Length: 242
Ligand SMILES: [Zn+2]
Image (cartoon, rainbow, N blue to C red; front, top):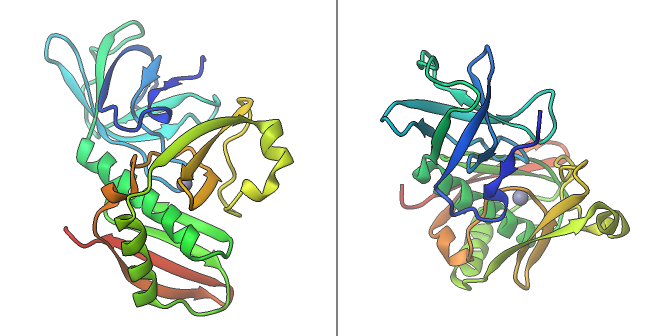
């Protein structure tokens, strides 16, 4: 099965694209030749949305995952009970994501990179959803909720541009300090790795969807800091405006 063309990697603002169905799997997984749907990975939840036909038929997509057997193939998971009878290899569809959910993922994901800049310890866990983001730091010292919240607000207000660029796996191997996270290793096997840079602040391999400027993150708050284990401090973020 050919790898899916992942349009969201180079433009996280794309809300929809035209695509062709390549396969409909027995468990309701739909494979397209190209997509704007981000598959769960790197701690970030998958996109939801819908696939639309030109005649108005549609199928709701509840989640997006990486294919368990075929590297680089994105699987769109149809919502429970969806009618897939009109979908077959060759069917033309318009793939449209749930933009509000994606925007929440973008804001939270970039916010977690700001947290990485504020807390220099290694990351050993990460979860980014539309409702919250949490990041686990490998450390024993306590973290101050108010200080972190103020730091985040300052970095958001600095309105720093966020860029992505690709490097080869060989370049990454030559610069191991770029791997910021202990648990989330950059996706391998396609010869190149994407870097996300928050100008003047943070640079790390990451395949996720980000805002274009930290100002777009808006009002985030540290809702909780937990001592998850003797060597882990968990920081949970929420939106102040929801
Ligand atoms: Zn990331």
